[in-house]
Amino acid sequence: MEVDIDVKRYGKRVSLRNIHLMFPKGETSMIIGTSGAGKSTLIKCMTQETSYRGMHNNYDKGEIAYIPQYPALDYRETVYDAVFWSARFAYPLESLEKVRKKAKIYIEQVGLSNVQKNKIRNISGGQAQRVSIAKELIRNKSILIADEIDTGLDCGVARSLVALLRKITYAENKTTIIVSHNLINIDLYDNVIVIAKDSSGTGRVAYAGCVNKMKSFFEVKNYVDVLIKVNTKEEGGLGQADQYIAKFETLRTRLLL
Image 1 (spheres, rainbow, N blue to C red):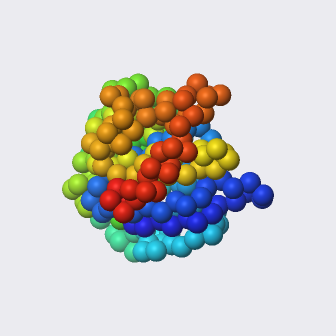
Image 2 (image 1 turned 30 degrees about the vertical axis):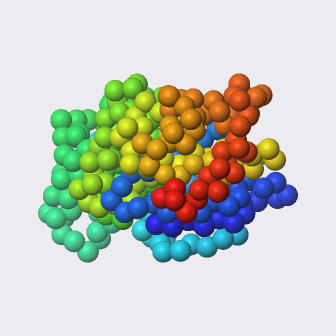
Image 3 (image 1 turned 90 degrees about the vertical axis):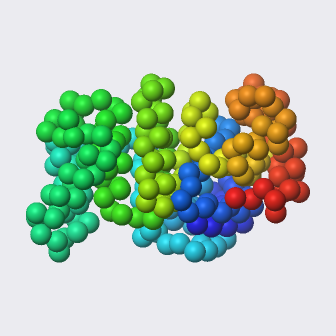
């Protein structure tokens, strides 16, 4: 999956510039960045919810399964019904027996078999997010994009969600992209993209590449120090975003995903 955004504007304000990324099939990619750098806008561009100047290279919107930060669920439904009706809409010509079988397979895949008869309002936040994941997975799309799905969850639950998506990515050869602030789980990703605001306040790529090369690129010992370096001084950072944006541009051909 390739993304080429020359410029994304909201009126006169430039939100993103020179975003040229390739997301490998069968791998997990994490998008992190400073507050207001344009991560949500990038996702909207990728899912084609908003227009921009650039190109859509080798994918279309129909290939994408999108998991939002807050699950869009009917909390009056049971877990089983929520997944079943997603399957029914995705496969309207298949028999009820086959649709029921698909629903049960995906409920089991995301680890919800023991609560499938429960109302969604009676399950935990992490389990509700797994329902949302199952509803998207059952559509069998090749690209999976998740937007801060671990927000508000405890560390263990958040890690289990990312580990689940990683397992599915490898098993089904999907392209998986997850926006997250949770750097504790960075070891579960193959690649990482850092979006930072340059001195004009425009979102730019400060790094895109393998997770295990990021520390040396930013010359840090801890991953959390990356965001400290690229955050503005007003945000409590060191204000070095321009430096690393320029460094990445220089090394782009070697570091691009």
